[in-house]
Image (cartoon, rainbow, N blue to C red):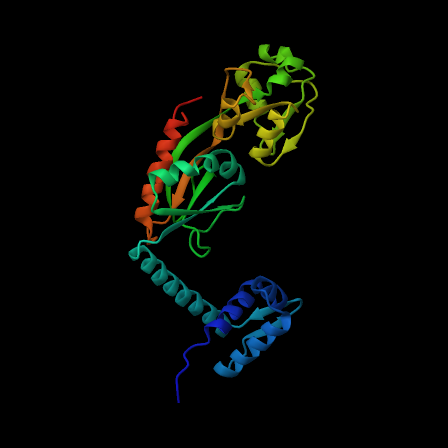
Length: 299
C-alpha cells in the first residue's frame, strides 16, 4: 500500500480553524465554505482517531491534539517555504517583499523605484502597503520601512533618520492668508493628523495657538500633504512626505522653525532571512537615497 504522507491541505484548514476558533471564519480566510471546513475536520478526526474540536458557546475550541497538529503543520510549511526561497536565491531570482505605510510608498518610495531598478537591475521589489506591522516571519514579508520608536522584538532594526515637522501650505493659500508667513495663525484653518504635533510646534516657535482650532484631520500623512497642496489649510509635514510637492512648487514652507517628530524612520528585517544579502543591498540603496534627499540632516 502506498504511503500518501500527511494530508497537508487538510492540515492547513485545521490550522486556520485553530487560529480563528471558527469554521466560518476559517472558511472565509481560505476561500471555502463552512461545510468544507467541517468535512475536512471530520476526515482528520477519522485519520488520527482524535476529537479535534469541541463547541464552546459561539466558538469551536481546539483540543490539545488539534493544537499539536497545527503547530507541526506550521513548522513543516515554514521549512518547505524556506527551501523554496533558498532555491530562488541560488537560481538568481531575487525578489524582496517590502511592507510600508501607504504614505511612504506613494510620496517617497514610488517616485524612486526607477532609480532602484537602475542601481539593482537583478532585484525585483514587491511593495505591500498597510498601516499594520508585518510580522516578517509568517506573512512572506522580507523587510519593512517603519515609522516608530524602534522597539520591535526579534528583528534587526536599522535607524535611517530622525524626522522633523514644519508648517507648509500652497502658494495660493499663502496669498489668501499672508499673515501666515509672520507666524500669524489666527483664524487660519490648520490641517492636523491623529497624532497632533501642532501644540509642540507652537511651544517651540513661541507662537500663541489659535483660541479655536479649525480644519481637517487625517490619519494618513499622504492625505495631509495633498490637502495642504490643495489649499485647504496649513499643515505640519515631514520632509519624507512633502519634499516632492515642495520641489514641484505645490507647497511652500512658511516658517523656519521645526520640531522633532517623536517617531523616526527605520528599516527592519530578520537576519535569518535567506535573502539577507539582497536585503542588505537594498538597505544600502535606501540609505543613499535618504542622504541624497537631505533626510539625514536635521530640518
